[in-house]
Structures are given as C-alpha cells and as structure tokens.
Length: 312
Image (cartoon, rainbow, N blue to C red; front, side, top):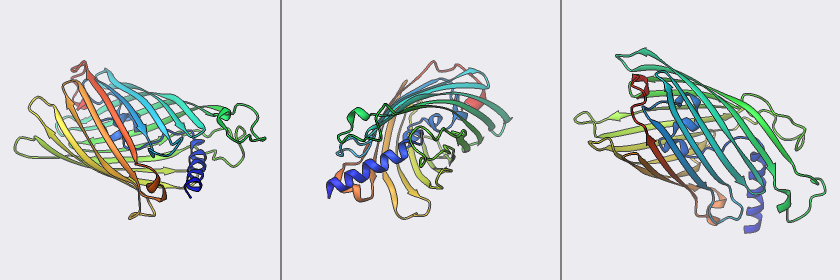
C-alpha cells in the first residue's frame, strides 16, 4: 500500500511540476510578501533579505524540496526593485531560475495613508527531467528533456491605512507544447488575490492581529485554492517583535476539507529575522510523512534608505 501511495505521489508531483511555476506554501507570511507579488518590492525603509528552505512531506523518498533567496529595496523615494532566486526539486523533475522585479508606488492621500503600487517581474525558469535517475528505462525518453521559459508577472497593490489588497497575474505568456508532450498544459497563467487587515491595540499599540487571505486560480485546468491566515504580533519598544499564527489551505470547492493546516511563528531582533512554519497534509499521505517544514532566515539592513511615507 505504501508503494502505491508513493507512486501516486510521484505521478501527482510530475504532472504539476511541468507548469513551470514556483510552489507557494507559507513563505509569503514570513514577512516576505514580495515573493508572491512584484508590487511589494521596496515597501520598507531598508533592504530586506530573506532566505528560505522548505522540505515537503518529510519521510517520503524524493518528496518536493525547495530553497530560495529574495531581496528587495528602494532605489528612489517612490521606486523599488527586487530579485528572487530558487531551486525546486520534485522527484525526478527539477526547476530553478529567478525573478527580477520593478515596482512604482504612488501616494494617493498622504494624510490617510492611501497608496497605490504597480509591479512587473521578468521570470526566467529552467525545467528539466533527471532521466539519469530513472530506475526503469523509458524508451520514449532517450535524451535530456529540458525547457527554458521566459515570462512576466503583473500586479497592482492598494493600501489604505492598515488594510491592503493585491492582485497579481502570474506567468502571463503561454509556453511551447512540443517539448514534453501534447497533454501538458500550455497556459501558465494563474491569478492571485492577497488581502488583509492589521488590527492594532489602541493603548500603546504593542499588540497586533492580522487576518489575511490568499486566493490562487490556475487557468490551465480551473483549479483554485484559498489560504486563510491569522498572525499575532507582539511589538517591543525598539521595534523588535515576536509573532505566531496559523494557516489553513483548502480547495475552493472543499471548504471543510483542508489541503494543509499548521502553525507558524518567528522573531525579529535588531537586523535579524527568524521564522518557522509547519504544515500538516490532511489526506492519505498523512500516515506516511511527518508534514512540511519551512525555515526562514532574514536580514533587514541599511534602514532609512527612503523617507517616503509609502514605504511603511
């Protein structure tokens, strides 16, 4: 039975790896919204650097594993840039590449903290099959199968006081269907909505509650999912803080049947940022793995590089 489930897992992973997309778990909740939307590039009056390691379904051989590094900063009062590099291995498939982003931030109303941001990313993705690792030779696969995809993301972000609403169209260009087979999806486009609100304690504003949601829709096959998140943040006098929360992901036609659910937490002390997230997969694979583990290490350096109010 275990071997059958393992085979099913590899088939599932291979079918979706060819979409040439970056797996999104809870990385964006580790104070790193930029990785899901270029319009967040440069929000913050410092250079933000985040390194992330994610291991999915620990205990299953050749389960998905990804490492990434993201950095964004201001280059002018209303302009931000960012870079994102990743290496994602998924069974006998592998993809790696990067994103290069540009964002422009407009002040709609300085008094009411109302801002509008536009972002664009150029995406470079290299995908390949590791045929040298095939245990059983496949006569249909006799050479190195790889493809390089060039694509773009477009996004817009609206912020009003302590609320935010972001829309992103990712991988807006189609891909070549003649590399791996005629049955793979040619449409890479997926659409994302990310929204949230920060409730602040009124007396000394040392405690915050931030509910948020992240919705994804994939045009190729119509599947969609939603994350429901809650973060609690305790802020110290020197702007250091501790935070904890929980994330709940489900397919949009199965609200009470979550795909992943789990806690997360972190700390920011001076320029150093640390976070950890655990996700439990609530399906047949649950008995054969110990869940998904993610660690984030970050640095916030050169604070004060911009004094524009739209950085906050």
